[in-house]
Amino acid sequence: MSEKVKQLKARLAQAANLNLAAGVLGWDQQVNMPPGGAEARGEQVTTLSTIAHEIITAEETGTLLEAAETEVTGLDYNDDEASLVRVARRNYDKQTKIPTELVAEMSRVTTQAFGAWRQAREENNYPLFAPYLQKIVDLNIRIAEILGYAEHPYDALLDRFEPGITTAQVTHLFDDLKTGLVPLIRDIAERGKPVDDSFFHTDYNEGKQWDVTLALLRDIGYDFNRGRQDRAPHPFTTNFSCNDVRVTTRIQKNHPLSAIFSSVHEGGHALYEQGIPERFDRTPLSGGATLGLHESQSRLWENMLGRSRAFWQYLLPIMRAFFPENLTGVDLEQAYRAVNKVKPSLIRVEADEVTYNLHIFVRFELEQSLVKGDLKVTDVPAAWSAKYEEYLGITPPSDTEGCLQDIHWSYGTIGYFPTYTLGNIIAAQLYNKMKADLPDLEVGFARGEFLPLLTWMREHIHKHGSKFTAPELLQRELGEEIRAQPLLDYMHAKYTKVYEL
Ligand code: ZN
Image (cartoon, rainbow, N blue to C red; front, side, top):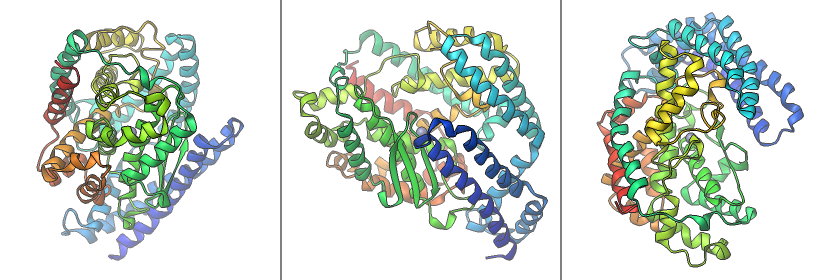
């Protein structure tokens, strides 16, 4: 390896180790820590991430980066060293452009905003949160100006989470989806054959639910020698190396599907991380490439696999063995329809596969208007209600069930909601290609054979780590741009049958 690249790699590995250690503390905070530990834990994490940030943004890193860039000139775009230097440069520029004073200000504002959001949500008191949202919007506008953009300030914010994709492209993709999904949802509501899912809302033994999720994770290929599952109120996946990738799930007595789909969803994220080559550990190429690509993995396992008829051919007998008293007389068709019930609802995280994307459109459109100055912070509740009425045909009875439901704005980050729907779009594209490559894929699902799916993913997506942006990776592996049609086709084909439209 070239000398300067080697030095750069060693330097960035130190910063990575500090951030990964902070990650262990974060995992512990959500899984094990008693509430009293929060303040001390916050300081520990801040210290570690501050030192990591200092290493990454130091002049010495910049000098090494320049020297390394000279060394890798002429190497292939996908060469490990060339990619490492290219991605390191992107990260370096983003991190050094934003002044420390602005980072500190954001940290102060979000600490207060989080408390205000929690109280505002509890009391259904939007005006309490509004001044903080105003500050967060203003700070994000400043960040956009500093980072720079071609057309829309939102471009700069989106680029932090999904590099290589512009607001205009996302708008185009979402318009395509909207045109197809809004009438489909209306048709389901007006003339769909009703779905009964009451048998999934009886008392399910919590210990047995836990056992089912473990069996499921094992069957989809999650490696417990390099991972573990725990319980957490808001399921997430975290990793400290490709050899230590942890998932969490949520168990609810009257809602076993919550545990099942949380584990499969997080399992999808985890399989991605476990599949990334060990040589990328502690480098800028470690981990999944972008938020959209990460979500394409979790969503493909959760929806395209986990909500397919073939998957329930495999899972229903297992469920019946664990819960004979809950599932007597429930046949495959009933179970399949129940896990695919579509119902417009107010809360995004509880939404079904079809309506989910509409929740994302609302946030994407409001965020854009906010940073462009077309929408005043005080007018958010009214704009929110109008969009829910337009897209989903329902109006939130309160802001608690409306614009105050999501914690995300109080974190200070604007620009990453679209990556959830981008994930769904990309998942459908990947699934199409995979089915063309492996015609018997779904026949295997019914027998619990998921290895071909995982092997395909390893070969086409996981092995690249963070080398490529989402558009680059799709062009390379599918020969396609990101496009909404495969997701629309999938939705139409599936739900016209489920609802006998
Ligand atoms: Zn996810």
